[in-house]
Image (cartoon, one colour):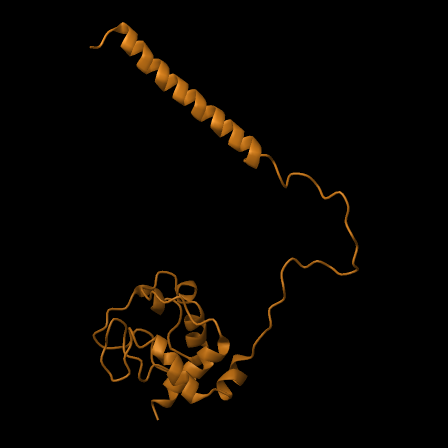
Length: 170
């Protein structure tokens, strides 16, 4: 049954397994240099190219007013397809508030919709510029907003959508 020799074999087997596991870990660390200190040394030779290394590519500054003036309403309606899952344009609220009349409307002014407080802290009115900033990165513009959409990255898409929403008012 269970005598001293059996107990000694079980403990020896566990210790042997642990030893093999630790040796395997040591071998893997030395093989893959985990924590080996790469990147701690200075570069030995630098080739001068005559250009200053800015570290980041310069972003192209886009004039949003010009994009809005040249916006395509048909493309804006297509972009609204991404918003249609949560927003309506018939005056009724869905998961998000209705968007008819949103351009120029006070922020948080849709009757009966429970807004998060984060929006009203950022601005008072949904101007095209405020809508552009919000649609680019909703959580970045209004931290704490309950809108779960990641945003529209292309400025042309944002301009087309805002122009189309503005055209709904007549």
